[in-house]
Image (cartoon, rainbow, N blue to C red; front, side, top):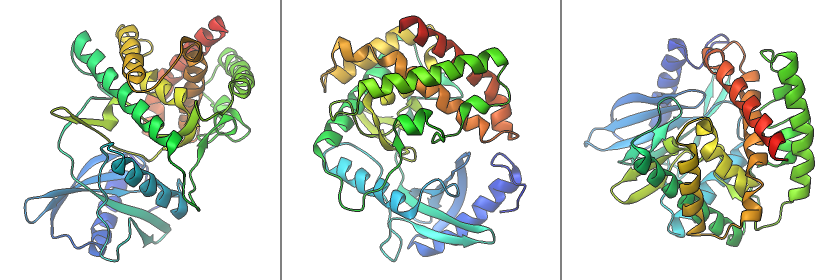
Length: 338
């Protein structure tokens, strides 16, 4: 990829499409066409097959996961599937691998292929959640129940030897080098906003230590269980996009699901439905739920770190004002409840 090709540029899309076509030579698939589905940092394509079928190809961003970490993603997904949780099935390459590493002029990219899944997204970051209050409550009930089943599985399942995945722990959220970036250094912050977020960082670190990492509250999480990552087909719900999955707090999972609607009128009903769905599958006391503002505040800082490390991109320019405002509001609400 050329040095100046931004993820949202036409040049980037052309390069990712060309790379995908090269990679598909490693799979026993008769390809008729390739169309972009979602091109941000990962480039995700719909693969139209000659026999009328479809598949999904994912070109990974450079350097986000090691090969061992990506291996672990597939190991966990297969374990979830064996326990009855619906996830996409990987289509292995002709060499029997879950993914292939394809060389480029400036490094390599990991590429994998999944079965096509019919269904509709519950919503998206761009367009929000869909439907009236009752429909939105049903969506979040599904998210809560799905999250609880995954957390139940994670508590019982033992990671195999060599399992490697990143952690959304205290260090990964508010340490010196947070997983998604040093959010307090975001240039768009005013002095007052920076002061607020630095105080929040210190308080979050203190409370995460107090909350602890017992198996009843911390383990493997999807970490991006938002409406666009659940596909509904009839009564069946499937979880997609495990790119951010790792070790973290169960409440961080729920905070992620709620974060982008915290300022919306649907939030109280969606939150209540999410918790009802969760409690239908897994215990959660009121005392535990009282920690949710902590994890909403922590989640908000991660998105600021994300745009901080992508300053100059069109996506960061568009999202930064909204993300700064939302993170500061959530941080103020967090302090008000401490």
